[in-house]
Length: 297
Image (cartoon, rainbow, N blue to C red):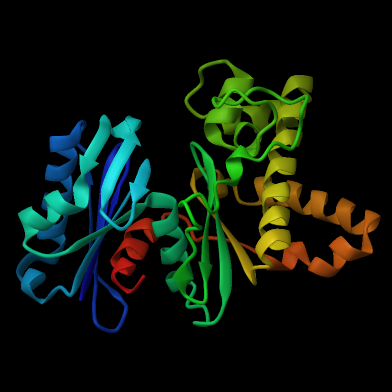
């Protein structure tokens, strides 16, 4: 049996995976703020989801935002959790009496999506997380590809529009500012809780500024898929994260971009971008699920 934990900014989600790969138990808890509270949230999640089966658990994995050293389990710059530096793997291992693997939450979600979709062990997949930020995780042949310095998949920092809006990293026209929740909120600038939906609603009503922001969103998502296919030639690109819940409101716009590219370029048409794209089922616990499989990665 395996336990996976996804530590998010507001909630911590945990799953217990049975020997046959099914989810035997699942729970959500509020995430504490600050290093000690984050550790307490994770310990509670593991012990409660495993219950009396804790002694039979073969591996424990944790997905968490921020910069993560997957070898040492060290976490830094998880600012939305109030964590500047935390030896999370070592501390959880000491508290739980078992080795704990720690991974960036997007990488964990990529691994979870790979298992959730029951892909062939030889398949390759790019997971595109469209949430507060924009980043990707790569699973090649069933294993995470982190790159030489752990930066593989950080495509949100790729600049695609020199005349575009500024991102938080100080550069204009990055994919993250164009096609993430935080980027769209900064472009829209009204302070609404759900800026993406507000922008789409305003665009449907003909608002010119909203139409431009919506165009950037569709183009940013389509370009992200194109980059993952052209650089790694993955079999599949799977979209997850909060923006993926827009469903047809997002996918129809992205498909229109693909269709325009196909008309312009026989080569791009041969890539069959629209056929390679899938969206995760809503509310799938992919980050927790992927964390449970970190022991084999």
